[in-house]
Each structure stands twice: as C-alpha cells, then as structure tokens.
Amino acid sequence: MIEAAQDLGANTSKAFFRVMLPLTAPGLLAGSILTFVPAVGSYITVELMGGGKTTMIGRVIATQFGTAGNWPLGSAMSIVLMVIVTIAALLYFRAGRGERIAL
Image (cartoon, rainbow, N blue to C red; front, side):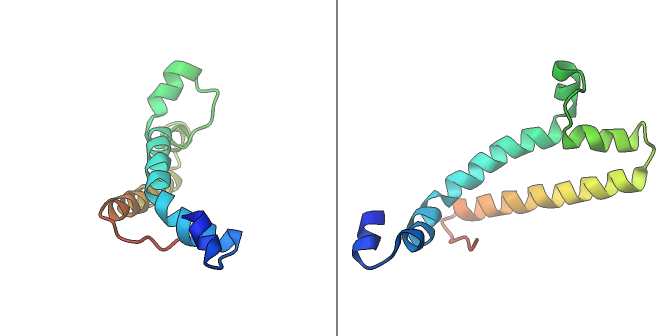
C-alpha cells in the first residue's frame, strides 16, 4: 500500500501518515495499553520484585497517601492517571469498532 501511495504521487511522509499509521493504529494502541496498564497498577509487584528501588507511578501515588501524607497530591495524580487510562481504552475500543482515529 505504501508503494501504491507513492505511485499515486504521495511522498514518503505523506504515505506513512495517510496509509501506514491508520493501518497500524489499533496495534499501536493495544500494545501501549498492554504495557501501560500493568506499569500503572502494579505497585505491589515493584515492592516484591525490586524492593522499591525503581520508581513507578503506582509506588509514587502510594507514597503520597502513606508516608508523605499528601492526600491532595495523591488524589490529583490518581485522577490524572485514571483519565489517561480511560482515554487510551476509549481510543482502543473505538479502533476495534473500525472507526478512524484522528491522531
């Protein structure tokens, strides 16, 4: 399809953004969600496996609620994280229905 787009006059970047990106968008979204959601939610895995030496968002939020006692910041971080995950899931479901995603 890239070759056909170039034969019809599209340059390389236009062929990529108009042909390749729409075809790969569902896979990109699925891969992003499959790697992002475990990184977001698994703070206990970091504790058990890494001993808390690595910084992950779940651990930072848990620290804000527990050790730091900064509930407003922990709540704000949780809400932002929820919004990001919800938007990513909605984009993925929209791509699964075959609708075009405007990036």
